[in-house]
Image (tube, rainbow, N blue to C red; front, side, top):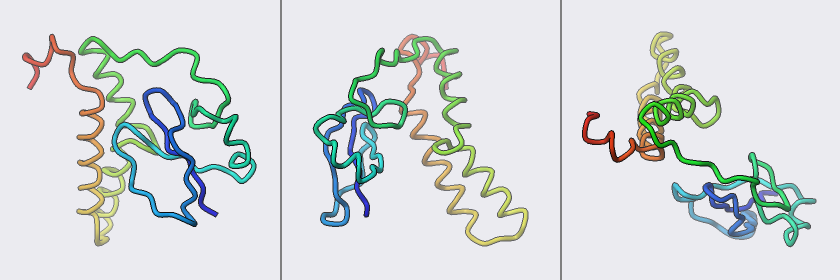
Length: 136
C-alpha cells in the first residue's frame, strides 16, 4: 500500500491525497512535497488537511516560518539545511568520499546528487536583495 499526500511546503496545506497503487503521479516540484500516510490517516482525509513538522494535522501551523532577512541568517539556515541528516547535501558528500576512499564504484553519481541538493538549498534560501550584489 502506497498512499501519500501532496502538500505545499511553505504553508503545510494538503493539496491532494494520492493512491500510488492505483495511479501514477509526477514527482513534486520544489514548492511541494509528499508525505506517506497510514490507512487510518487515509480514512480521515476530511479532517487531516495540514502537514505540520512532517506529520498530518487537523490544524494549520501556528506561525508561518519567517524567511531569513540578513546574510548571516541566510548563511545559518543554509548550514543547517546542508547538514540535515535526511534532506541535506552533506550526507551525499560524506557517502561519496567514503566510497571513493574505499575504492567503491559509483561515488561520482552520489557526489553529483550532493551538488544538485546543495544548489537546491541555495535556491531555496537566496541571499537577501541588499547582500546579493556584494556576494559572489
